[in-house]
Length: 396
Image 1 (cartoon, one colour):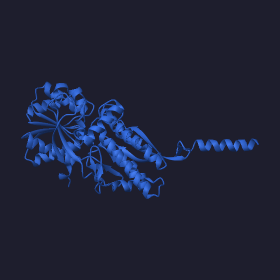
Image 2: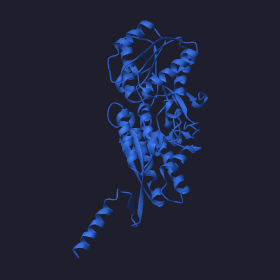
Image 3: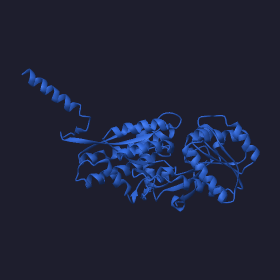
Image 4: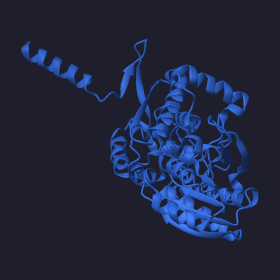
């Protein structure tokens, strides 16, 4: 009898420690767990852009939980903080690879984090749908797992350059970047296009992300007297550059990329934010009826207006969930493998999102992506869109 009790106890413990692969529903039927991971900076100076990606993913996932339960699966979100740090991103990627219930990653915010992380994901065919990455190397490596729903830097940078040339009438520009994969990449694309447009580049300088005193580079800007200053980088440094330009009475127009288009620009730059232009791969969803309804739901759920990439986190997650559902159907209703999900995701066509439609090309770029140009005309966010460009016009 004692032996039987021991065997029974061991059996119960084994069932209880099975790794959470199945969970009972209300009817007692075991549900297999499927996880979608969201990965973005949730702490540190870029959390203001990373948190909305997570919240958008959470919203999408919660809206589809019942549908997945009807299919026999318990849907879970695995939110991860990559701290906008490539090393942390790789550690997170290794953690997600080890969790076999994770079938798709929605992330990252930073291209410099996404690139090394994707080299980990590809080892086990873990699909990645990015809501925000713009560096050309994201998809130019042609990894079968990597997809993005936003435009590339070789669309965003040239679009900003053409705007500076044709709309602002720039004859001389000064280009600054933050030495990151993303910041320098988009700055280089801007520089190439303005030079092709016949505009003189009177300066090209790098700053260090995290610094706050940009007197040295701005002294060079003041001496060069450009019509436009372009900054490739994120909003913490870009906002300070705009503020310090105003303090030094530098009259040049200021253009930044999507990493600068954030409500915190107003908080950091103050009145100097007025007149700042930003190219962005993220549109203003409140300009459509569907988008306004979605933004109202987001506001009611989280008690805050959606940040720039919230709707893209939402759309990327819905693309991921659509791929998983199609893979389930193709697999006879059984839980699909990561490879099956990866193959289905790349074939996504004509997906209707809140922020963007999605049709992936052979590299995983979205044929329907756009570039938007915003101008801060007052101390309010979102800023008005002054121009909208089809990113495909710049795709090679």
